[in-house]
Figure (spheres, one colour):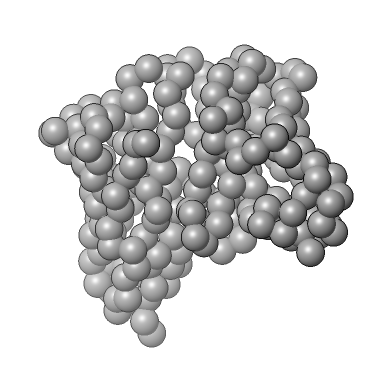
Amino acid sequence: DAGVIQSPRHEVTEMGQEVTLRCKPISGHDYLFWYRQTMMRGLELLIYFNNNVPIDDSGMPEDRFSAKMPNASFSTLKIQPSEPRDSAVYFCASSGPQGRTEAFFGQGTRLTVV
Amino acid sequence: GQQLNQSPQSMFIQEGEDVSMNCTSSSIFNTWLWYKQDPGEGPVLLIALYKAGELTSNGRLTAQFGITRKDSFLNISASIPSDVGIYFCAGHKINRDDKIIFGKGTRLHILP
């Protein structure tokens, strides 16, 4: 398996624009996590899904952030409208099968909002 | 909310030295995980611990699951330049629907 695949690797956008980050989890994994990493706050869990269903989105900063998982092999994290303080590295991770809790991370998307 | 206290925040050591870092929590965890993150990459799992008291090795790395279930440590023996990076501990509770909580990380620097 190629591991967790995220795209794009880098994104630079202007404030107010919509940003969509994409993730393909490891095949067979039933959990998918979206994390945000900054120097100040470290790794923060934004939202996670189990079997494509959002379980806990309490980490989503505000209504500008939304995440979907339309099927077992794809998830998106959308920011609309983006703001400079959203600049961070966004990681997607997946875990499974049942009973295994180790999360495997993608390489991340470095988002810069100017 | 739940927090993992990871220490030290950063370390500067000489090549060849042993390294020790730890993670503590006020909560009990069922699983402890240790990750390493290289610059520009995502965290990579190093060791997973599932039982209180468990001691597990992965090459020069050794990690232990504390018997109180509230702490874990990671040791690196005979450090080499490629050990540079950020090391994260993470904890997970019995119910798999609970979140994986990450520490703030220990940044390891190796002096030439």
